[in-house]
Image (cartoon, rainbow, N blue to C red):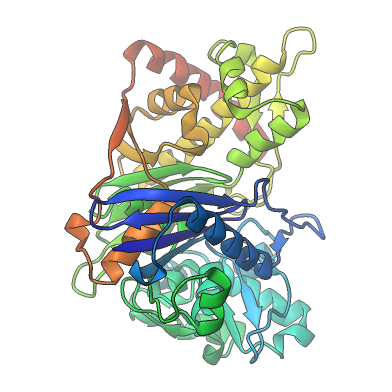
Length: 492
């Protein structure tokens, strides 16, 4: 019995084929080979063509099936993980009306801030657990105000994962977790937020029908099946945003447990059993994948937009160099990079700064003293320090994190990054042989009823544990303190 998982990222599409009997991932694929383009037609905008995600899903599926021969009828379910907070608009023929406004697009910040002020922080924080900020609902309002010719043609709005599910099944649907990540969900009323829709003058009919996170969400159409070389009628049985799914993929389901990831953006995500919020909405709360009416499970998320993208930018600037080579060179510089400080905030408005867009900065750069080793180390340390800054805010919400789980991927492939993270944040890091696509496949197995949550993680192994070192801790904390001083200067 097999299940496919897709991870719809902004850099690439990943696919995984899971043998649910053994819990072993038998094949993986990534498409395209190079990172997908994010279009920036105006400063602080970020857009992608949703049809390009579908094209790469098709391509990744072909690679997957070439790597492992399987009878398509033995694939019993499909799971989808996806980049959060994006907005896709389709007409009544399910045709895309404009490029998707993706997660790191900052155009709707003022729209959301104005809504926060008008609706009031008491309502927004107690009912939405967030400011409307730069989330999906505010992006839709921006289209209504600035592109009315597009808005009047919208039949349904959806998140990136909802769009891929629609391409697979022909059905427009979403989840409660997805609605919460768009700030469409009222946690107090356990329903779509009537107040926010009224304030934004958005017709509730534009929202897609609600389906469960785990369970049959639709079946593969004959057309999609022929395109993917899969069996018509194969059900889609799981869907979640990339960060709830990352937590699920690491078996982070209970209060006090935490997951982290450091891909294009960086996230620390902890599970809470209360409707908790940050008074300044620097940290955001969404419905977690295993939430139930009688048992609250929310995901408290801090996000740093400028993470792997900062490292990728530096790689492109340096020319012919690989990430492993960058990691080796970075370790040659001393802790603190000889005074060079990197502030990797060049990927749109940062929630941890109340949606300010302060840009990326290097402090104390000395042309006679600093070389590429220092630049490489400073960027990795700056990313870690930005994540730690967010974790300090989480501590103010009584989320004191002492252990985190992560996939052995992206920035966590760097020994320096792992060392800096463990010692700056004073946490134990557990690294596992999993990723978002594998998590989506495991979720599909649960949603199909083939395994329960308790058995969903067979075959997953902890491959490394990184613990803080007392001697290194004091050095990293000193460097972090100096970095904080630099950050405060940038923020004021």
